[in-house]
Image (cartoon, rainbow, N blue to C red; front, top):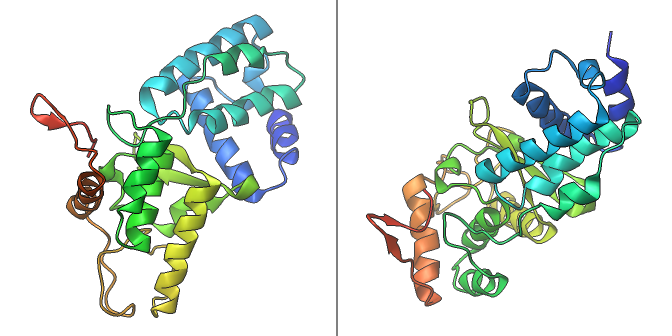
Length: 248
């Protein structure tokens, strides 16, 4: 029998995609604190819950893209709200990081990202740059991404499951603009004759005809696409020791 706390929570969410994403975020929160089940979360005092939420936020800031944190926390906050618990959300939100990153330790301004995208040579390349700018994902996550890992969210956003099935699994989010550009790229593939399936790669290697064997875009290929656009935009990557400031 479903626990009442989770039933109340899930019945407050209209979209199936949002429900799945919020449930995943709440489960990760529960597992982080090694709590037995969802009802057990409600046996904790409001004051202790507040501290747990703040500490979990600090944990997320070290782990995921700044762009993903508001949506991850939204699901957890909604659970406590729907179960009539009092938490100080304004305090939490004051500690949210700024939305700035494209990848790696180098922070790019909105103007920088716009300029880089101008020098992307195709719909795929523009979609890729929008994708990493929005999610903050490492380039190494791109090759394993499949369409089943991308689900629609409210307000024309999309949720993306990265490193599915591994200990590093987490959910990131595409902005409405990034979602729109990705949709345009996928529609181009359909027009070229590709049959898109849940197991199809989100990004595929260059092809002459859409019906030829689909090969996922490799890590090396993705790095090359972004590096070329950065160079053409005149925004050179600086070396930090033996590494460039772009996470692969």
